[in-house]
Length: 437
Image (cartoon, rainbow, N blue to C red; front, side):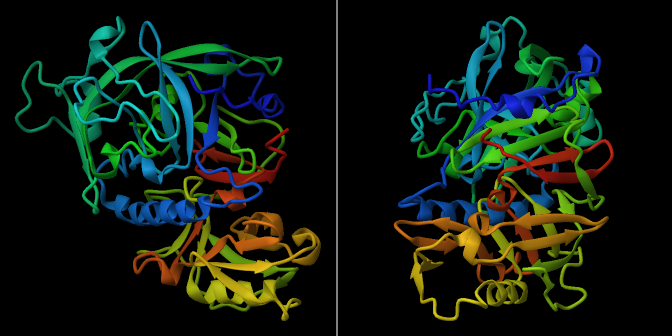
């Protein structure tokens, strides 16, 4: 078994301790596929390729019936280990805030990878090998609720199936099962104890496209989206946790935690989520560089068709509309007119021997209800060799026709922040925090 990431106990101690035991928060240790500290080296190509796939599928997923189920694992950035079934077996799952269901590769899948390029031994889920596992039938309530009514042609003893097709030809097909999920729960003293709950999830019988490859394969996906099919929604409906989750990510060490349940300390200021959107959309109002507000068109951050701002921890970089990107870059390098830029695998890079935090300004994004996101130079630049830095902001206009007017904020700017998604109150917020503590 791969070594576990160190659990951030300091962060866990911040979680709700005064709640009844039935609503105790749960935590998942996570690891990052591409640690970003020091010399990024060969990872620089992987970062761009990852984001290219992720960006395109985020846009395409808006049309999926279930809100963008199970995005292919190549587009995922963080993964965790969970236990399913009785007796429990280990599964490595992509942690994805942009999708809704939990699904794992099933024993009936002939083409699913058994090994991963990440150095992990993969496991196929067998519902018959678990004493608590059962197949969800098409005439059961979960299936009807998922599809908005009884499926055409449904008869007794027919499984409730799911199928997702992606624009690039990738696909996942299978059926829903119910079994026991085991996870860590936070106790009143900031420690953890085993917890479990019955959840319904997908048993993937066939994966196509990127999902069938072993380069960065995992056992499946655990989605933290807003739909009732998500694990979080199911646990909340059962009274196990509040419909709230949080993450504290450390891109340098490549790990962190996802926590399900309420957070009481530190207090986190929030901004409303835009209603009726398939992702975590928020209203961005303005951008400051070194305390000076950029002069931008009043409607440039408006939410609409293929417009607006998305918070997505599964994306590495941050993508800005072309005009915003150019204005930000001009302001950031205003005091460094002598810097010579190099194109390193399509990243804007430069030599700099001093401390970037001392030599470059802080960028602040201002959101509705006066919530600010401060992004420091070591967060919007990343090291790529000796005294070589590359810009972690990208021109969205040159990346995707559909995404050219979208602000997509990835994990580089969310690192070392406690980010709280309160789906009960439809708000999201954050505060600076030492996530490698």
